[in-house]
Image (tube, rainbow over all chains, first blue to last red; front, top):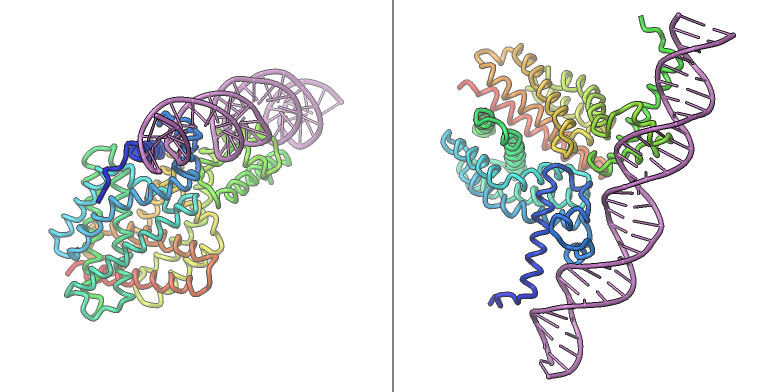
Length: 208
Length: 208
DNA sequence: CCATGCAGTTAACAACTGTTCTCTGGAATT
DNA sequence: AATTCCAGAGAACAGTTGTTAACTGCATGG
């Protein structure tokens, strides 16, 4: 397996990745719908026309960025939420994981938060679709927990959506606090922990 | 008071409003950071340069749109949340109110959801600031409720933020379901009611 | 009634955009 | 060794953009 990829194809993948990286960097200060094709190629150092060798349009590149961004988010949502966020220590660990992820993938997180409701339909749909998939996966994880006994499928999915949304809200709060003092980040963490705690309590008494 | 506003100034306000309306309409299919000054003036039917008589820049117009959008949201957040969302009937009424608001002010809601994390800093900050203000106001309302006895200020604010975020999430889900069948909207309503119910339960047992 | 103020116009600017077609150099295939 | 393939370059296209300056006409205040 894996032919080690000829020189030719390897170089193509490298410039493709350069395009994605440059676009992601440029998107820190603007939205995808205002990102120009020439702008991206200029940042990479290739001719504008070479762009078409890799993507049909900027929207197309955006969809590719969604895959990349959620590829890095996927492992997190598992390790964060699957140990049925409940005990105080687990909640703290989950919030710390979110903080770390935002710190290490800030550009990706910013991109997702920005384009989730952004002005480019295909990208919006790609993000919504992936997040819905995450929620379904998380639902399956939650169903395994002993606490889920007696819960309907619909209620489990409801809870999963609540967790996913809460995770994104927390992530975007961390994002805003990134350039500020450490105290701001700690405050975000405190808030997030309390909100998760409240959800956890609601979950525990759901069937009363 | 109120000099009935001379013909002169009245006309100025009218074209200013026309600019805001045109911009809001154009923003249904793109983000603010890609909205062009000429694009807006063309839609209104005035010369591009006349734009500067009303706004310094597109970002400036965006901030004005935030005021407008949240002005219409302000009464809702009161009537929705102040009767301490708790009983089943109150939750249903709150969700219906959100649905109605989205239906009647879809463009404004879309604008807020899109630019809350959008690519134009001053607009982002204006939205965040206003939402934080809403949360503080809601906190005061929540404090009046008998259920809030024994709650710390920080916990009340935490709950208020949870409600505000939940409201926006629900609103944007309604937005996506606007063009679809009525069943999709009813499903969003079901989900929103359940999530509010879970938060409500968590709230009731917070001090256990 | 006349002078001022000011919303909106016109013209022009340099710079930018996406997309087309043609070409080239070198890796891949035969 | 000869041939095909294709990532990227280059030039040109018709439009677009924000911003400037100097203007016009008309409601306003003295």
